[in-house]
Length: 191
Image 1 (cartoon, rainbow, N blue to C red):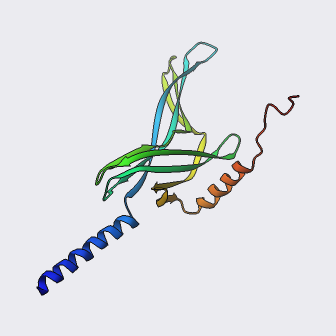
Image 2 (tube, helix red, strand yellow):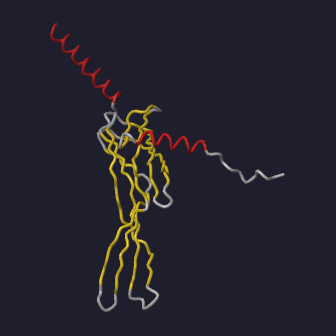
């Protein structure tokens, strides 16, 4: 009888710990930076004799957001992201925001993808004249300063990732500036 009470108490304790853990950290979040070179049909030729050919490709950066290790099936999981981008020309900060909704099966992985951001240009210059040469150069068009990813289950934020941590203040300041800008209306001069 003592053993059965101890076993029941132990089982109840394990169940409580498992349930408490599932409520505290219901899943794992991983954010992976993805760079991709995308061929573009932009080509230019030298005006003199068409021996210099330049092709330009875009370099796109996005993030893969992986949700995994859910202990129970999670439905209607909202993932919100904000990426802080410093543009080169003109030099200004820009927020790229997005949201995705998904279901996460137990012990499975679900991947969401942020929208791509043009962060550079890859230029291939080819001289097809007498001394054939190739050159490759990369020119940055934007720099990603950092990101913030938040995951909500049942309307409650359960996990977040901010990289680097000091970028959170800049993101919040940029969000505030975006909200504070007055919106212009085309009907202001209407009779």
